[in-house]
Image (cartoon, each protein chain N blue to C red):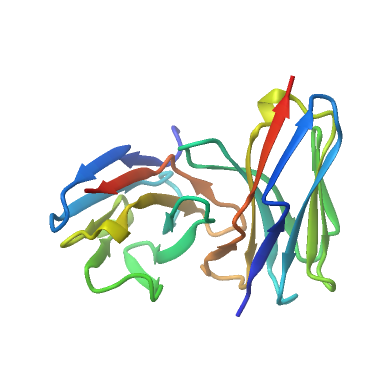
Length: 113
Length: 112
């Protein structure tokens, strides 16, 4: 059974710091991996999607990497800002068809000014 | 296109009552998903539709839960005889069949 773990559960940093969020999954046979952002009481916003054949994806200050063989992904946030404060969720898709995403519990990030 | 819409945003109900939530996906998306998220947890899959066909249901979807997607457009999720353990955020997502998902803002259910 696929399980997704995110470490740390919470993280507090001062504005301007670079930071790394970690995601691990138990079964390397994934179709893709996606990072989402969730603001309190809101839905999910997709940040980056990495196909199983890819090693990394970048969008602005965000960079996500994927090491499928070791079952790990990282989300790197450069020059953090208070507006980055949110919960970041990692999710894996295990099949090509309509199979569901399996989520971790998330990392709650707080960036202080 | 305004994205995935969910209604209502919040619902407070008494234990034992029935509730129904609605999801309007992005119009050209043929796949629709329901997830449930409790406090401090990641979303958990409930069910999935491709067009009007319900193709997969999680074990979390007890017989008190039913979902429909008539004509492959909007979807409804009904919970009968609500229990306090049903209190959660119910999230809907749609997909065009490719790798990406678009989530709605969710319906927060509180059972008192």
